[in-house]
Amino acid sequence: MAARTIRTQVGIVGAGPAGLLLSHLLHLEGIESVVIESQSRAHIEERVRAGVLEQGTVDLLNAAGVGERMRREGLVHHGIELRFQHRGHRIDFQELTPGRAITVYAQHEVVKDLVQARLAAGGQVLFQVQDVAIGALEDDSAQIRFRHNDEDCRIACDYIAGCDGFHGICRSSVPQGVFRFYEKTYPFGWLGILAEAKPASGELIYANHERGFALLSMRTPKISRLYLQCRPDEDLSQWPDERIWEELQRRVESVDGFRVNEGPILQRGVTAMRSFVAEPMQYGRLFLAGDAAHIVPATGAKGLNLAAADVRVLAHALACRFRTGSGERLQGYSEICLRRVWRAQHFSWWMTSMMHRFEGSDGFDHRRQLAELDQVISSRSAAATLAENYTGLPFQLPGEEL
Ligand code: FAD
Ligand code: DHB
Image (cartoon, rainbow, N blue to C red):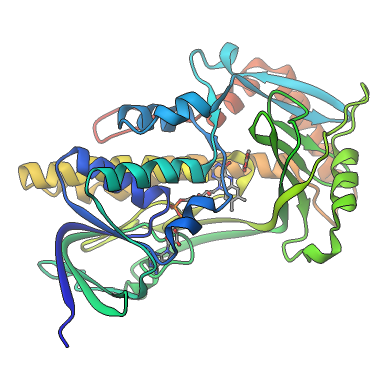
């Protein structure tokens, strides 16, 4: 039987933050899109992941009319703490980057807000699709084939946005040799937990400790999000609750007797640390955005924010293409995005190298880290560099200066 054909302007693979936000921004520009997602709606709306939104991401969500709940429930932070040698040092965003802050608001809440906005506007988001394949990327129009509700389906579209994350199929559907990959893996991961416990501090704490890195974050005034550096292939069965709490307490201990608040652990998982970039981020009628094109180690809190920055550029370029017929902005998509991507790669690598324990070193690395941290807390320009990058570089469109 012939596949059911859906005709649209932009076919979007993946309903993560990149795919959903792109679909919403295109809608605001009067451009039609269809999003397909391999997971269920409940799954993507509950998946615990990022939590830190840069100022630019917050501004973008607000300008796009999907920031109402974020403004109500998000926690605005004007600084973070760096903790080492049992002392805390605050990096004050307000003083160092006037007007810029971060907002702690869970990624899955952003996803919920975007799904709701798409469906309320009559947008098509197809969940639990299977056997997705893309093709005809060099032709006059592109296509996406998949199965949905036991039916063979086909999207015929002008362009495809590959927003299907690091493990998606879009990047690998392009002929070999088109993309160049840059990759770095780190000899550690993060064990992350969500706990029903009041955050012990009003702001995030990044701790460098001889036993390894720890990060205290939060989701709400009653829910903590906490991370411990661990092995990349760490076996969670070796981490009963008591061991997690004991290790957290040790890594963030301070001269003033600081304690992490403990409580029932609601969720736990291990995340590997990786730096990855595919260049260019486009091929024919395919444009990669977000984790499909690049991964950063989580220490700089940049992944979700880069995804938002990519799709802002892509939505703008597609709008120019459909409005004026000129593909010039689309051709420049990758170049514009990669500049920001590499800045974020550098920042994330730098934060990661400064904060984690590197096995096998004779202590040189730790001493070097302490010197670097000392510089960050004692030099205004070094602190400002961290604050500028952490709160996020301004978003850039073609023709705009950074
Ligand atoms: P994804 O969110 O991965 O979305 C891709 C979507 O595509 C998924 O829904 C997937 O199911 C779907 N998909 C995959 N294959 C297919 C297919 N074949 N067909 C259809 N659909 C498909 N970033 C930050 O900015 N700040 C943070 O604080 C932060 N913390 C993090 C903490 C953790 C523990 C983790 C794991 C990540 C963190 N990140 C953080 C990174 C951030 O979560 C990602 O960068 C972000 O999810 C990227 O969004 P995306 O839409 O590009 O990809
Ligand atoms: C969170 C995650 C990060 O990677 C980070 O650097 C800061 C906070 C979080 O999940 O809250």
